[in-house]
Every structure is written in C-alpha cells, then in structure tokens.
Image (cartoon, rainbow, N blue to C red; front, top):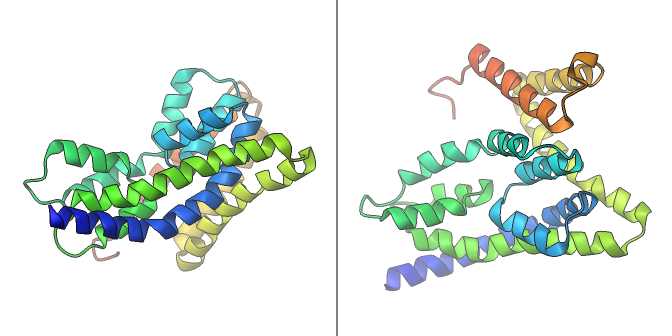
Length: 236
C-alpha cells in the first residue's frame, strides 16, 4: 500500500509540468472547438475522453464538415493508431501480476508524454504512477479546451482568428525538429504537403471531406514510407 502511495505521489509530481503544457495547447484547441460549435462542457468531455491533440483536431474538423459518424470513427482511429503501439510497449513494463483492470485503467490515460515518463521508469511499472500523472494531466488538458471555448465566446473575432493559428504552430513545432534530424522524415513531410495540395485541387476528390482526404493521405503516405524506408532493428 505504501508503495502505491509513493508511486501515486511521484506520478503527480511528474504530471504537473505535463498538465501545464497540456493546458496551453488545449486552450488553442478550444478555439477550434468553439468554431465547430461545441460548448464548454462538450469541449471538456471531448478532451477528457480523447486526450490527443491530433485526434481531437481531426474530430473537430469532421464536425465542421458535417460528416457522418462513421467517418469520424475512421479519422480518429487513424490519427490515434499510434497509441495501440504504445499500449503494447507499456504493457510489458507492468508486473506480470498486474490485473487486467489496472492495465485497462492505465491504458485509458496513455498520451505521448505520459507514455514517455512511464516507459522511462526503472524496473516494473506501478499503475498508481500512471494514475497520479493522469490525475493532474488529463484535467489540465480538458480544462484548457473548455476555457479556450469560453475565451472564444467572449474575445473579438479577430483575436479568435489569431489564436486559432496557434494550433498549427504546435504541429509545425513537432515536424520541424524531426525533419532536421532525419532526411527521410523531411522528404515525407514535403511529399505530404505536395500531395495534400494536389488532392485539394483535383476534382476527383471534390466529393470527399477534408478530414477524409487527410486520413487517406496519412495511410497511403505513411504506409509507402514504412515499406520503402523500414526502420532498421539497431536504430532507436
């Protein structure tokens, strides 16, 4: 029991800076949610159930496009598919005696950052560490979205338009460092930009929503890159 308390406190400690970062990003996401017509409660609930910036942005894009539910399922599945791999990796860190209920509960709160601090823990992972990190990080993410929607309702239209660009800045900040380190990643990013522009100008794809176009391009380009440039086993 003492070990669980210690792990929980350590999770809270490591989750506080994550929560602060989440709040800032989710605030910008809330501006997009406001444009999609969500109220603060809906935005909070959406972020609490889907804690992924790319996944939520895709979700709000589908809502803006008034697309069917099945398209939303497909888009969110594609954008959040990496969490399946993270779950498989993290499951190996738990003690073999860890119950399925604890594994499921910890899996609910997997994000890129929580996965990072969890996988870096030495020895077997105590699920209470994940619970501690989730206790502060996930409410920070959800509250940021809700407050972003509130701000979108009271700020002038010019300010809302300016703040909505911040989310794109976050995505740029993700791809630029990776592109500098790896020429293949840089090439994939360039191909993605060119392919997206070409598809947007092609009448054949005119009947598709923007979210469906993005999802199809993600599957095709990522699949082609994985097949042509597989990661060698000795690479990190």
